[in-house]
Length: 257
Image (cartoon, rainbow, N blue to C red; front, side, top):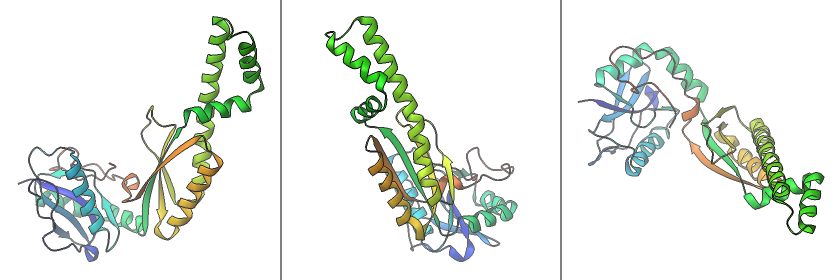
């Protein structure tokens, strides 16, 4: 039976509610594997597991429970090893690395911040900031809309101004939040967001970090900011050394979700 891995923690923090269920239908019982100073939170791996909402939530719930007693290194959804021995073997092989990561991330959580433009508001912003754009728009208006070439030129200039604003806003969001975080990690780029950042934040400083987010919302009304957290520090778990023999691809190496 293959082994599903939720996370890695210090052996003294490996406390879970009795009979707790994890991924799968029916939910597989969660258990703890111990090796030296480390412990892995695992269950039997269900066959044909897919990232359905029910199982994603189960994975996150196990990590939340495992992290209640102390720092946990979260594994990405779908991390599977051939068996329990493969998991404990990795714990032994990488003990120094995992213990260092646990010390570095102790007492910290992750907040993910995504920013996008509110279309009408950002258009108003770029027009108000650029006298040439305003003059061209006014000239076109007085000319009954302007010629095709005039409208095309104005549209191209507006698109360029919005694109430049995206870069400026992305920098300003990062600069406004980085001082409140211990570390920052850039997430995958997407056409839906002008920036996608994860911040490692001390639990005791979470209110200060969220206040900084609110300050950016007030000073940048043309931005929509979406905040997800507190989360386990997915984006700050260094995979460490190469996978030892016996683990599956995407197995017990730590990663982001």
